[in-house]
Image 1 (spheres, helix red, strand yellow):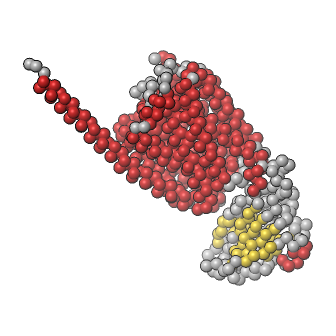
Image 2: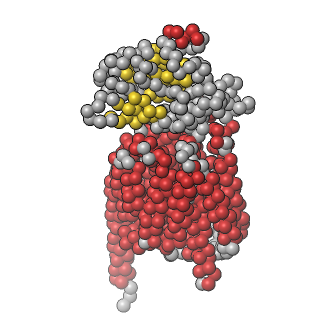
Image 3: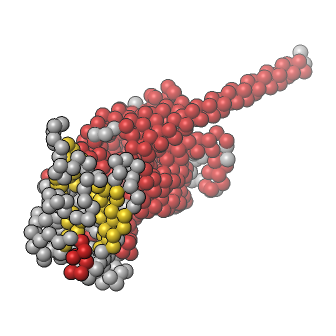
Amino acid sequence: METRDRNLLLMKLHYFLFLGSLGPILPSVFVMGKQMRISQMVLGIVNFVLTLLIMLGKPLVGYLSDLFHRQRKIVFLSMLIILMIAFSLLNWIPNNCHTKCGHVRPKTTTAHPNSTSTTTEFTNIPPDSMEDMIPEPGDGMDRPPTDMELLATYSDDMPIDNILISKPLLKPEVNTLMENMKSQLGNPLEKTSTAPGNTNNHEITTLRMNIPNVNLTILTDNTTTIGGTNNKIGGSNNTTLGETNNATIDSGNFTTPYKCIIVCNDDYLYLSSRFWYYVACMCIGLMAFNVISSTSDAICFDILGEGNEVHYGMQRVYGTIGFGTTALISGWAIDTFSGESDLKDYTPAFCIFVIFLAADVICCFYIKLPRIPVSRAILEDVSSILKEPYVKSFIFFAFMAGFCEGFLILSLFWYMEDLAIANGSFGNIKLIQGITVACETLLGEVVFFSYSDKIIELMGYGHCMTFCFFCYFIRLTSLGLITNPWLIIPVEMLTQGPTYALSYTTIVAYAAAIAPSGTSATMQGVMAGVNDGIGYSVSSFIGGIFYELVGGSYLFLSYGFAAFMCMVVHFFVYRRAVQKLEFEEKQQDIEYSKDLFEMRITTPR
């Protein structure tokens, strides 16, 4: 008993240190990719492939842990060290690899009700210099990207012909029309015009440049300018794309604002060594994290012993405390360390990660793994239990829970940053995200991990899953309707516990309860592979593609509808399964009573 209590204390410390190390890193892994100007679609595809590998890796490592039982600790400690190395290397990606121009997102406001002037402020001008956009030797491209596109929508009153492209060497006061500029620039300009739009007779004029060192300047009666001395879009080798990270455009007497989208040719980015460096480190780190998570759960259930699976939440809650605490601290530290720059410096996050994970390796070294019966036919034992219809049904809905959670993990921080850009609060976004994670964990998950045993005993595994899908419906729908990133905090605080914490505990506890003796790690790997392997991968693939196409708000509402359908279907499936089980039990009672009656009749007196 003394050894068991000591091991449980070390498991609590392990969860605290392990998840505490990941609090600053895990929520920001995909945000780092977005800061590198990697598109959401590409990140979604990468995560899709990654989670498929996780789906295969978790059961495989679990099987090896059960097969080579005495070497479990060596495998476990090795994965911790691999995780430390992989994620630490992410901090060494060169800062000048933020190479995608992306889309400049305009924020439009009207000065006063009585004023006819409209100001359009571009708050997401990429901070890349043209020099940084030229790939280094060996990065897979022989020439720099040279296509840049400007789309400008004007009202009928605005003369479209007064649009020009000027070199930085030209004096600011030079006002040359487009026809004169063609000869000076070597005729790099191609002008196309579309039919008038459906509203206000807007026209869209497209200007294409085929030279890298230019400024984009729009002149409307000499009153409106994009570019200039301080806010250059494009520029020479020493000029960044938006030195002050925004450009304010006053359209004078024209009340209809125009739209500006800058799109650069960034195909070379996905052939560069920087991109694949990021992908390799991220994939290895996330695979190690997921394998460690399922292995930790298997060890925890082995220490708890048979019949005590529902007490898992009391151990896991310490990981939640560590995760939320370090996420809050690192969010503040990153914003402070980054200063006024829109490029976030994640050095404080990586420092916390290394310190906590190094301490966790020492902690895990002293955990004494209990001796458990070894199955001689691990695969046969596991496959036999997986053939049961009620287990198949539970596995499918574990996949759907992972489908809902995977989308949140992938896109919640993207969505928060989009809302922050629209609301002008991007300077504090890391603090907002840190507070969100802290509220999710310290106020949401702590409660449900602590009382998950009582909730499961009261409701049962089936009703708990139905309740979780209902809460996912509330959570996703609410997020889809929000327009201010600060409002995400109370939603996450109230819904993270009954969605992620309760569903995760229900899934792993159920896997431990049905696992044949000696197959705990394999069963945890199978269940986790379905939940955060297949579920996350499918969700990431769909979410990554459609996030760019339809936007975050519509996608959150769509996922909320999917969660609602899961709730309804699971309720009726589980109800039917319970009725069938009760019928079979009654039939068994009738058969037993009949046999007992016949036995009494035939028994000689």
